[in-house]
Structure formats: structure tokens, C-alpha cells
Image (cartoon, rainbow, N blue to C red; front, top):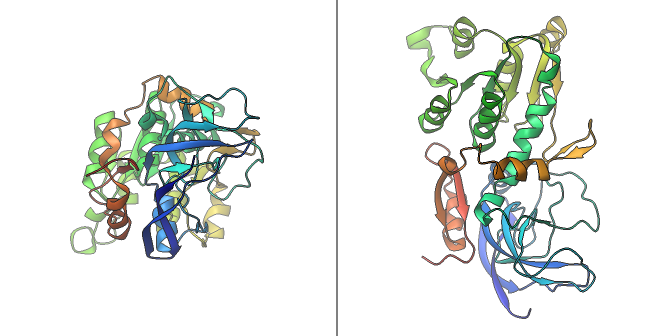
Length: 338
């Protein structure tokens, strides 16, 4: 296909541009896809702000939460046809892409991998696969199957993945408490059945040195697994304090450097586990198909996560003025017009 396309470019931290570039050429082993839905991921906001370890300077950026349609298929590709709905396309902040996001989030990618065809799902549904897969990975790395009887989990940070994880935990019969700064996100988790806490409530003028951690321990107790989904050293310390002795803290929030309290971890025998994004190296598996199948089951409430749908042009300001308080999931539709 010849012609030009619109794409976002992230040339340096705190800079994003809407540019016009050539549509990628589809080689014999490529699939050219129209990107119809791409979610703004927290990792992409971190890349924009220069706080994430990933650097994505090519047109389309790191955009990995994509739902796409095949428009041209290389002559050596089998099993994919024009018009197919595709998962795991990358460089998705653009109208077209040939890049396949096999793992993403800094993991080395497998050469020669193909997108996944899922014509049973809408393109918007497919764009949630990456977030759902990350949440499944976090859940499985907690290894709740080794725990007998009542099971408790605490989720620190209710971004989109934290909210999806909360649903997965609840649907597996696990009691959940969650700490989150913003009421919009707490409201959703409460609706699904989680106990929610506002860490801002516990200030020195009103509570002295009594913290949200103290309140969670008092009302909910320590948990068999605590999920740190924020990427803050403060919440990592909270997670270590809240986990039961001998159990696991899942550290998923992205930060460049962490300071771990050796004495606290040693005395409690805490296990710190770092789930990768869409891959579980311990089990030698990835979660693309598991995620897509869970989406297809309709067991997850994903529509409630969508704050709004915007154009590529509007996405420039969305990155510049990203509102973590009022937004949960922003969906960019590259072919959308105002």
C-alpha cells in the first residue's frame, strides 16, 4: 500500500508530535494492519515523562494496547487474511503498522512472530488484551493454589491493570482490599466487591501517625499476596508491611530504582516477585491467548474502564496533560475524526 499516514512521535521526554510519514511497506513475511483502537497505557505515559526504562522513538511509539485489522498480507504468510481482526500489533500510535508486539515492556521479542487472529472479538475488545494478560500474569505469579482455606489479597494502585486484576481475584473467590488515591477508581472496585481505602485520608492533622496501612491491618488483616501496582517506593514499603510472613509481594509498578528494607523482608521471610508483562518466565508461557479468551468470556467489566475515545490529534494533549485522577482508560482511534 502506498501513501502517507498520521502517527505520534516521542522524540524525547515530555515531547510528543503528530507527524505524517510513509505507510510501512508490507514485506513477504509481514502483515500490514490498520490500527483502529489503541489504549494509552501507564507505561507509555511513563515513557513520555522519561520515568520508564523503555525508549520508543519510532513513529507509533510503544503503543502496544492495539486492536487492528489486516489490510495487506505478505505472500509468505499463512493463516491470516485481509480483513482479519488482529491482536498484538505494536507501534500502535499510528494509522498503520507492521510491527508485532510479541512480549513488549522491554522483553526481548521473538523474531518472525505473527499477530493473532481473533475475529470473534471487536477491535476495541482486542485492545485490552495486553492489560488483561499482565493482570493474569500477576495473579498466576501469586500462586494462590498453594494456599488452603480463606485467601486474601491487597492491591495497591487501581490503574487499569490493577482494576482488571481486582476483578480476576474476586472471580476466583479471593477477598480483596485495595488502596487508591482517586475516588473514581475506588468506586469501581467497591462496586465489584472489594474493600477500598483512601490513603489521602490518613493525614497527620486527622490521624497522627496512624496510616492507611494500620487501617487495612485493623479491618482486613495481612494478606497472602500484595500487589504493588503504582511504581513507588512508598507503596512498595506498604506492600512489605501488609503481606503475611512467608508470603509474596508482586512488584508490578514500574520504577527505575527501588530501595528495599532488608531487615523487614528478612524478618518476615517476604518473597518479592517481579511479574513480567505478557510472559511468565517461570512457567515458560505468555498470556496472549489466555487474555483474549478471558475477554471473549465476557466475565470482565472492561467498558467501565473506558473514560473516553479520542483522535490522534487529541492524543497529543492527552499525553501532555494526562489526568490520572479523572481518567482510567483513554482509547485512541487513529482513524477517528472529530
